[in-house]
Amino acid sequence: MTQSSFKQRYSFPLDSPIKRLTFEEYLKYEDNTDTKYELYRGKLIPMATPTGLHTRICNYLVYQFQVFFASVELNVVAINDVGVRTGIDSSRIPDVIISTRELWEKVCDRKGSGVFDLQETPRLVVEVSSENWREDYILTRAEYALIEIPEYWIIDANKQRIRILTHPEGEDGYEYNDFVSGETINSLEFPDLSLSVDELLAPLVVEDLIKAQQVERKQLELQLEQERQRAEKLERLLREKGISIE
Image (cartoon, rainbow, N blue to C red):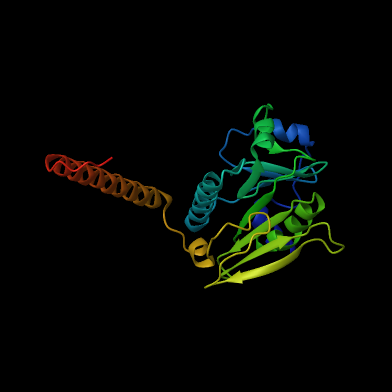
């Protein structure tokens, strides 16, 4: 990364003094703004405001994970805006984290910012790549592999593909498979999960999905009620004709 691109990415002059924080200080850090910060080797890294598409992809993905986990009764949760500690004084904030419920409750019980500590390894993390794509593909990838997160997704709308990285314990770190338009992703952690690349790169609005689900539920309830009424009517007719229904 060039010096100018680093300055543009992280929004501070390179020649300015930068206060280094310990991980414990990072958990308690506040600057009275809405800015989110990652921590890299003790340096605060301000995160850029996500685009509308970025936010829409994240919301859609969390919703689909939640629906899937509920349907198969897995004791895991899909969450965002939560950190993952990747080193002594480093911590990232993936766009989506999949964790066991017990581990998530442990994080919630602690004071300070919500961060998965070392040895509290999520099952899966997702980054929606944007202008900082080099970081997602190189630096963050190395950090996630180092703490052996089993599966890491990079959703790249610019390249129109989803890269799924697995087996971080290998000699060269993660192995990966790319999935493109027209394909369905293949997750090793959740092999029964079915999501198409096209759905993820151009997702529907979650509120519309919920409304459609409610409409479908009401239609099903109406259909069941109509069938119940028909059964009761048939039962009355048979009894009027003296035909036993037992």
